Amino acid sequence: MSSPEVSRAIPVNGDGASTGPPALPRDAAGRIDLDSVPDVIQWFLDFDQRVAIVKHRKVEEVFQWKQQQSQATGEQVFAFNRAEDRLAIGIIQALAEHATESELHSWISQLLNALDAASKANEAASVAYQLDLELGESVVGEAQKIPSARGREDFLLNCWIETLCTAEARVLGWLYKELYGRPYIPDSTFTE
Image 1: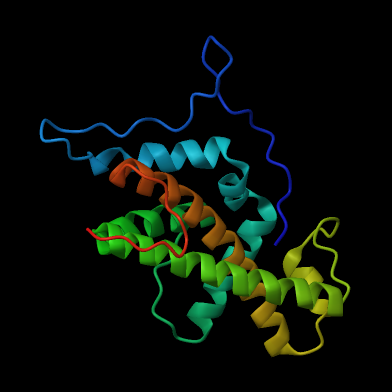
Image 2: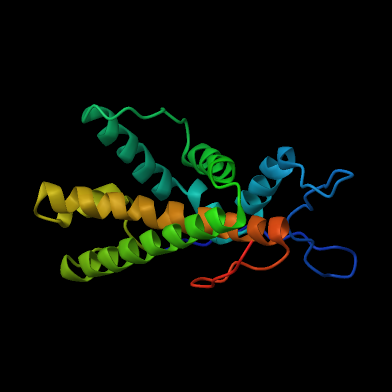
């Protein structure tokens, strides 16, 4: 799903340089205090347009559609109030469940693979059905141009996956660097 502009400027210090996300404090042993992760997530939601897109009304519409679809099919899902809440919890869960460098590296790679697949599927659907996601008022409404119910569902699910994986990979990529002292590099191998 293409990203409408987010009109919030990145904060700058007195020298005009970007202040970036807040630093993650470390304890006396040098371990990062993960209680500060929500502040990092909030910074990205406020100042990084590829993450802040999660707050856009079109994305929220797709997220609410996804939740309704999951509930209608009997899927056991937690009912989040907003898409940004789902993103934040997903990031925190990813850090908890992927506690080593290799596990987090693998998870970010999986996010990027899902993003790539969803993006390609959405591009193909947009061309095939002449979808106008930029000017259209509603992504769910625009998806009605897709003649089959399954095609519409796949398209909307891919819209959500594309947005969620972009945002989650951006934040986790930054956290990866903070945690392990080097940037995440796709397809890299390393030893712990």
